[in-house]
Structures are given as structure tokens and as C-alpha cells.
Length: 120
Image 1 (cartoon, one colour):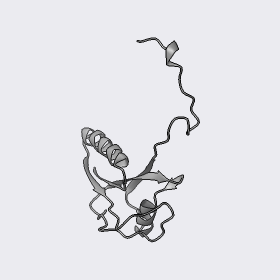
Image 2: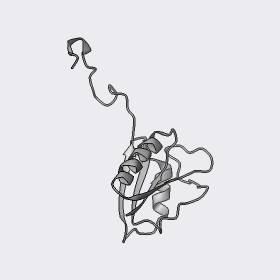
Image 3: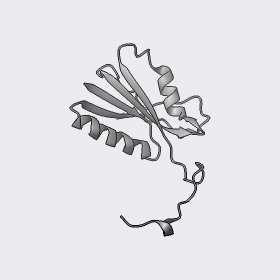
């Protein structure tokens, strides 16, 4: 299967996730291409008018994976703008993932007491 991974990444974290996904899919026998969305200028989570340098051609792909960072608890403005410009994907399989990094305490976690852990 010919799979296109289309992503938007500001810091490189989402891009890194997409590279690992590509490795797994290629190992499974798929043909995979990563296409990165590049915006003109700087955008903020509330930006509505996003302009792109170029838009990826999705026609050659049998399936699509869209990857985006999470901004302000939502999909990034860039990916939202890009997806709103796409025509219906009626004959293509598609998936979307959001990538976020929260510090463990911010996400509701409690620090572990490593003093009580045994080395395995």
C-alpha cells in the first residue's frame, strides 16, 4: 500500500513520531512518504488565516496519516486549516493523530518514589 504521512510540526517532535511510524510501516511492506506542511510566517493557536508555502498532493496515496501537535487542547491551527481545504477522502483510508508533551505533574501524575524501587 502507498501511504502518505502528512504532518505539521513546529518543534520537530511530531516529525520524529512520523519518522518512527514510517519505519514501522516500511518494515510491514508498505511504501511510505512523509510530507511536511510548511506555513508562511508564524502562527498561533488562535490563528484562523493560515497560508502554506505548498500543499501536498494526496492523489498518489492509497492511505493517509495526518499528524499534528496539540495546541491549546486542540488540533493545531495549521492542520485544521489544511484539513478544511481538502476535498472528501471518500476512497482513501485515513487516520489522524495529535502529539502533545505535558509534564507528568501537569497531566495529573504523581512523581514516583524511586527509593523503594529495586533494580531488575
